[in-house]
Image 1 (cartoon, rainbow, N blue to C red):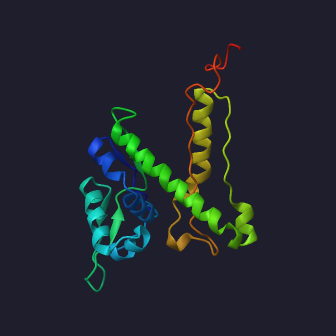
Image 2 (cartoon, rainbow, N blue to C red; image 1 turned 45 degrees about the vertical axis):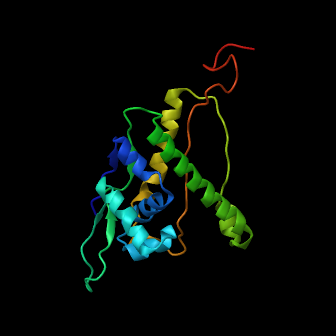
Image 3 (spheres, helix red, strand yellow; image 1 turned 120 degrees about the vertical axis):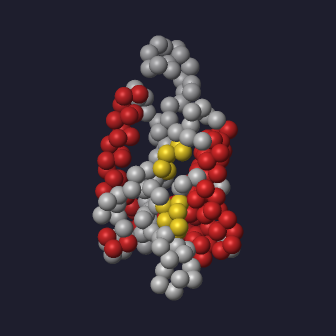
Length: 197
C-alpha cells in the first residue's frame, strides 16, 4: 500500500492552527491511516461532534486533513490525514507560532505520561515492565546527535506503516516522544565540549 508523504507547514498561521490540544489529538488519531467521522473523533478530543467538526475544518483549511469518501449510509462523511506526519518548517525558527505549537505538544506529552502514572498500578505486569519514563543528558557533537536521531527514526519506521489489519493481537497505542535538543549553557566554560573550569 503506497504511503502518503508528510505535510510540511511553513505559514505561521498554519503552525498556529495546530496549537490546540483537540487538533493535535485529531492528527494523532488520523495519523495511522484511519478514516474517522467527526462523531468518532469527538470521543478522542473530548468535545462535541459539532466542536470537533469546527477543528476539522480548520485543519482542512491548511491541507492537514481532508474529507474521505462518504460511507454506505451517506449520513456521515469520514475524515483522513493528507500525510503520514506533519512537519513544521518555519522560516523564522523560534517564532511565536512555533513556540505556541511546541507548548501544546509538550502539554500533550505531559498529559499522556501523567495518565499512565495514575493508572500504572492497574496495568498488567508486562506493560508496567515495558513502559519507560526516563530522561538523560549526554555530551554530543551535532553530527552524533543527527546520527542518533536517524537511528531512532530507522528503528521506529516499520511501526509507522502499521494499519488496522496489520496490528498484532495485544497491541496498543503507545506514545513515544523524542526530544533531542542541545542545552544553551549546561556547564559554564564547556559549551563546546572543550575548556575547563
